[in-house]
Length: 273
Ligand SMILES: C[S@@+](CC[C@H](N)C(=O)[O-])C[C@H]1O[C@@H](n2cnc3c(N)ncnc32)[C@H](O)[C@@H]1O
Image (cartoon, rainbow, N blue to C red):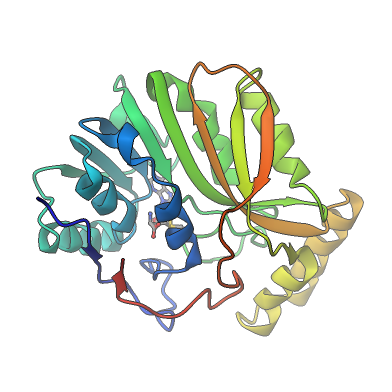
């Protein structure tokens, strides 16, 4: 029987290049906890945003028939490719170059049974050079809009979606995400598991000044916009749904308490169980 254990090489947090291959953080552990093994058996999987390959490799080891994994970052494709080989899933995982302005172009006309993603989702000041793995506009939702837009066209009937992301809102609900889900998937049953520790929006974006030495005025503008939009907190969330299952959006709390999400997120690890 094939081992389900995954070992990956990633960049360190200290690597500050735009092309950083994201280290292991609590969000990947969160993702592993929600993988639906039964649904993966002999199925075709698409991953949007390979990075180190930590999710695609796990999907392959849990029983997927094939995994197509996209990334626009050549460093991720190189390191992810290395990790695919050392985990011996090179016959299952097919790494392809991503496309910056049309996420799904590399899989045009293809459909999948299970689509996974840990997309770039950090609220980021406009026009700031920040990690390709994280920059996603002032609410961290820019990439998610593009991902949601054509998602259903690449899912087989009853296909499954699993996405981990940050989502802004108030202390009780990531209401900006709710609006997006209603816009792109009306009438669809969607389960959103919320982490137990939302982070204050202002506290989160202050990191850009304190740690990344970015322009204070630009960060201040983000805070003012958030205040106008009544956004006070950001949640880490897991979004799961089965295409074609009618219902509503249901929020729950995650089954586990994860490590804190603020940077550096979690311990530096090279191994993942
Ligand atoms: C948050 S990282 C997640 C990486 C990995 N899946 C993980 O969980 O560690 C997001 C990844 O999406 C990639 N990405 C950004 N834009 C993309 C696009 N248009 N198409 C495919 N991948 C993209 C980034 O280069 C980065 O590797």
